Length: 464
Ligand SMILES: Cc1cc2nc3c(=O)[nH]c(=O)nc-3n(C[C@H](O)[C@H](O)[C@H](O)COP(=O)(O)OP(=O)(O)OC[C@H]3O[C@@H](n4cnc5c(N)ncnc54)[C@H](O)[C@@H]3O)c2cc1C
Image 1 (cartoon, rainbow, N blue to C red):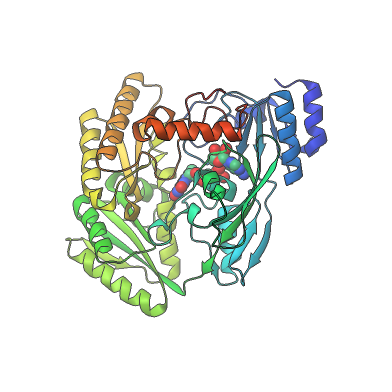
Image 2: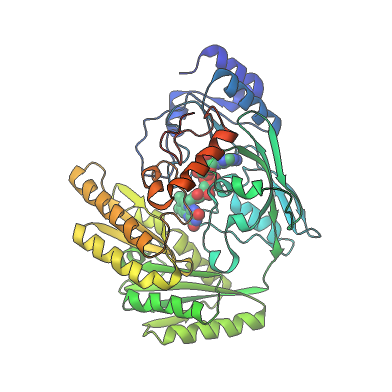
């Protein structure tokens, strides 16, 4: 519990109405979208409205020795906003202005609390495009996207958040304001501190302004749905599309369990008897899209699909993409506990990876739905379980460990886009060698010597 006199000081910084400290509020901010039990309450939640207020909050936290957890929409899947040492949650959703969309410099300058899809709509209105598109785009904030280096549905063709952030204003643990990068795509003046900040999961600083690179909005797009009687043919189609030097905007895989859960939830007519589907979107000029859609359909047809269907209208295409976005929500209806994983392998190893996941899951007798950004080799095996069943949870944990081992053996990574947070702290040394861990800790120590910012995330209880 934060003392009354400290609460008063916080109210002076952000205004009384922007300080939350009732038990109900604190419980709401004690968890995020990761399947970790609540129980770590923050002492207080504050909602600053400007960079200056964030600066004052960090001066206050440093002076009082109180921990700080930055938070956007709380949709991260790795426990990144859980206040395990209590302290202040700095909720950035009031800082939600789009400050500029500039068609001449091809940039947008935004505050961290803008919802990702609001940026999409704002720039598309003037014929520009901000490609990163996490499935959570309708709720997640751009600040959270930058802190996690969010990926999403358009990674294969366009890359991920780090490929579009060219400048940042960041408030450091000391309260200093660090300005990195700027309004130009080219900038090689010293170390690339902007890139260092991207994916830092709230442990190095709090973003208060973000400059995004934009590109021209593609003229049109086309959505295809391909249905397969087995997952191997679906995965082989993915490799073959890429090997044919076609990079669809979206190349998503859904297995039978996921298809059935999504269909039960959305009723959009997905084929419930299929073993796998690919949802594919191509974009570009009218001419390119026509040609690419045909080529993609031709390649998929070589792998014995049950059906290759092209969406007839943009609305139909949009409804298929929305169904894909609802995969996690649909799977989460099955069991009380949903553990969504985030393994990524080189696309050429996709078939092996899915086979291995199926083998592991069968051996441990657990229920899993597999879906993901197949074009990026990024799969989200989603474990459907019940955390009250201790015996089953042990099997789930063993299966997840085996899956990480296989991922690394196949040349992959244990997190493609959701970060380490709290949930993968134990596994970080599996992938990052001691010299890498040492370098990361030196960076953390340099930026935040008193370990004020988001403690316990990424590293095992880092202590100065
Ligand atoms: C249904 C669903 C679908 C999803 N799909 C995808 C997907 O396709 N691709 C993908 O990559 N992720 C996906 N995610 C995960 C999640 O949406 C992303 O990680 C997203 O970037 C988190 O944004 P947020 O605003 O919710 O951040 P939060 O969850 O609030 O915070 C995430 C991290 O960022 C830090 N942070 C937040 N704001 C700031 C700031 N201003 N400055 C510094 N640090 C900050 C926090 O401390 C925390 O470590 C999905 C989640 C859900 C629930």
